[in-house]
Each structure stands twice: as structure tokens, then as C-alpha cells.
Image (cartoon, rainbow, N blue to C red):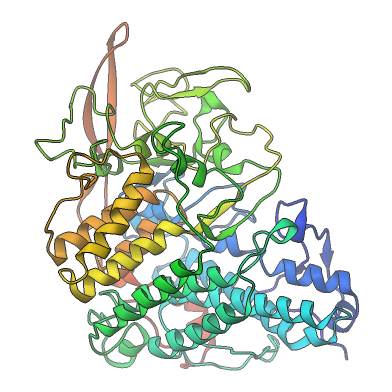
Length: 588
């Protein structure tokens, strides 16, 4: 009997298309249900199979959800943090459940539905990768092409294992095995350390064997820098407090969720790997302060092809981001909203925190003279955007009761803000975009900040000059003024704890609403518990006359957190089916 294409842990057709795309390596059309022998005897089908391995990359790096495509319903892990609020605020959804610490709906605790989706979909792609790796040598392609495609499959498999690891801890590792789902093996979870070592070895292989650059129709495929970027993130995960000395497990599950000891040398791996990537010369900050302050930041977050992009997921002929983010008056669906606390995290244009009495912050005009990244990230009362393509931008009003977009209106913002991050300001939501841009999972400044974080953990005093160099470069690119001391508002002589707090805040504002960075940072740094009992807020503006407004901060959502939430539950369905082989995560 011929082997049929099947998937692990859930039924799914083998898709030969990579979601909403129409060109390049993602150009495969239709669906394949052919047997493996037929697929791997046809070069076009082999290329389609390989392209399909990228299919769920964008979907799985956003928070788990029901809709078949994240392009239809933008959801991000960050909506479970103090940065953002999701529009559909019901605890049957992953991020509202995270905000409330309530997993009693949509399943109960370990049976919560989105835990199962977050587990099943990555394993489906891992299964496909293993199927490809077992059969690619049969393909009627050149040896060079076959090897490149196989190396890409190994990278994607490693990336999905990394994504599973940071959500669930130690995993059942399939290695190269293709398991018959009709006669599945009962696999145990490997330790956290074993998983880190295995994923690291795979990414090291990919870093040595994948091309430095993939361009033209292959732009967006896996590269050596992408492998080093994910490896940097993996090592940063392993070195961070939740895993490196802060293990929350006990008994049987202790080694599934971290190391048994603290080892500062784990941070050395982060620094070394980040430096390797930085020295490749393939990636760099996009700097343009001549057009306007911080324009490089705008271009880096809105441009399809950029040297800032280390690892990304591309779309074609769609501007789904701004359709999902912009307000109703600009033809957007406004599915996720910034909290006022995120706005407060941005410094002034002189780089000083708004709480600094010397910053120049004016409470009556809170958005004036701020870090330019604020204006490229968030729409606030009076921000401008085009109403029609090709026309001049006009103000968007978010004050209480403002038509369409105001706080308190039927389709207005519940926080007084909208996101514009990653949106092309020459287009409204839904306007055609001949390029399409997708999402960046890793941008170059993330590598710079991981490097700075690792050097801080190793020895902040000995490494101060190198640490501050990364911060100065990022803030210069942001359009922040250097000041007379050329420090871009970075405080001098910070101790280790102060520097870590500063770096994590810099990550918060640099990567706001980009693929859950805030979510993962709060977890790995063991900072999520700070949100327990904390209220997040809206900025409510009141119109009191012609072009006259007052405003106040209004708490709108209280967050809850308990320690078990540092790891998602292994789905109860998997626990039950394992006949005692799978050990549950702490607290579930």
C-alpha cells in the first residue's frame, strides 16, 4: 500500500500553497492529496511541497486561534500583555484568557482549546518537514537544489521546535521520524536541556549550510542569518531567569521546564551567537534621519525588502496589517489596540523618560516632542492618515464620542488609541498593495539588544562601552536627539538591574505589536508576575471647544497572573492519549 500524506496529532490536508500569495517561491497553487511516490517523482510538486512548509510560520508565531488564516483575523500574543488589548475580549480566546488568568472557558484548564491548537499546528509542520526529509532524494532536481530545500526543511523544523519549547517547555522530539498517526508511538517529553541542545545543533547546521542571502523570487526563504537569529533567541531563552536558575517545576516536571542550576556562561552563548550574526555583514540598521527623524524605523517596519529583516514571513499583494490595525474611518478593522501604558513607555525626543523632571514632558500636550517611534507606532487623538488614496492626510479623532473612531462609540477604540505600526501611510486599510510585506519575526535591532542584554548579565561594568554602543545606535536610528553628551538619553552608570530594565523597555517600544515580543520577554525574564492585579488604561480625551481638549487616564482592564501561566498546559487530550507517558507542566 502506498503511504498517504498524513499529519501528526490532527487531521489536515497537505497544502501546496502558502496562504495568500501569488508570486515567487510561494507561487504553488491548489492542494495535493497525491501519495508520496507521486509527489516526489514530480519536480513541480516537490517544490510545492517545500513551499508548503512555510505555510503556518506566520500563523503559529501569532497567538493560537480558530480562523484558518491570521490574515483574516489578526491576533498577537502581545494582546495578553500590558501593551495591547484584543478587540474580541472573551476568555474563550487565548490572549483575553491570559489577561484574566482564566482558562475555564473554551475547555477547562489543560483542556483549554487554544492550548491544543498551539501544540497541534507546529507538530503538523514538523511532521511535514520529516516527510520531506525522508523523501527529497527521490526528486528529479539537481543535487544542489535538493540539498538546499532539505536544509530549509531542517531550519523550519527547528524553528517550530523552538516556538513549541518557549510555550510548553520540554517536548516529545521526533527527530527525523515520521510517525504513523493511525499507529502512533507513545513518546515521552525530553528535558528542557535536551531540547535546547537538539534545536541548537540543528540551527548550527543550518547556519553553516544555508545561503547567506536569498533574493529575487527566493527572498523570504530561510538563510544562514535567519538560523543564527533563531539560535540567538533560543540561547537567550535558555539563559533567562525563568529557565536559568528560576525553574518553577518540582519533582518529575522540574527538568522539563528549565535547568537545575544557574550558569552565567549560558549568557556567553547568547553574546557569541549574536556577535557572529552581526559580523556576517548581511544585516544592518536602516537609518534615515534626513527625510524626517526616525524615518529608517518607519521604512524598516513597512518595507518588504530590508537588511533589517533577519527572519520574516512574506505575503504578496495584500496589506493585511493595516486592514487589521487602522480605525474604521480609514477602512480598517482595528482588531488590536495599544494601552496607555505602552504610550508612557516611549521616552521624549531627547531620550529621557517622561517621568524624568528634566525630560520636558508636557502633560497638557503628552504626544509633543516624543520619541519619533511613538508616532510611527500609535495613532492618538489628532494623528493624521489619508482618507482616500493619493490625498493629503487628515486628523483622526479618538476623543469621547468622536464619529467612527472615538472612545465610547460603537466601533471606536476602547483604549483611545490605534496601532499604525507596519502600515504604509500612503494606503488605507484594504487598499491594494502590489508588494505585500508580511511580518518580521526577527529584526536586526533585536539581535543588538540580545547582545547588550547578554553582555550586561556577564559583566555590566566590563562591557559598558559595548552595551551602550548598541543602545546609542538604535536610538540614533530612532531619530532621538544625541544631546550635548551624545548619550541619546541613556542614563550613565546604570547597574546591572537598571540596565536590564532599560534594555527590556527598549525592546518593548522598538518591537511593539511585532510577533509577541513583549509576551515572550515578560515570560523568559520572569516579569509576567508583575502584572498580577495591575490595571491597564485608556487615554480618554474630551472635546471642550473648537480644537480644545482635556484628557484623563481611565483604568479599563485588570490583569491576573499565576505562576503556572509561565508555561502553557500540555493539551489534556494529549495527556490522556499518552497512557501516562506525557508529564504535565507545573500547576496544571
